[in-house]
Length: 210
Image (cartoon, rainbow, N blue to C red):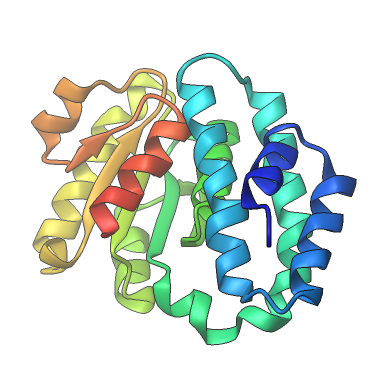
């Protein structure tokens, strides 16, 4: 009997050696790779996200847990194939034009990947038209827009406006985040949601993609 709780505990504890041993044992027992992914790894990262939201885990620990999961995901990848891809939502994430900050954005991207989503990380200094082009190219369901400077927050509105004007607004949910961003600002520019940290951003994206 596969102990998915033990996998989750090893992941939360950033114990890569134990987690790899548990994953390999489950594979040897012919447990479906998609079950190991969903019930062991993704379920564990969901708990990591909750602990981050509650202040029980901090960024260095979350990054370490994500790296441990990534290492174990490499074991499963050859067996997952199209099954995992079919259940994942396409997400685009980027920092707006004029803003070069990416630590928070990259953590959000990592958490979303750990939650089973397919993330297209565009990087920093991304103009509105590039967000639009990538929505069309990837058939994304979710667009995450980041800004750390108050001076670049207006570019968030320009990006949302460009998505509306391009005719693809109905196919995507827009999440915004960054130190100066608030729920009130998200409402003001027409975004679908605001997340104050990576854990809640990942949880919100999963809910919106469902």
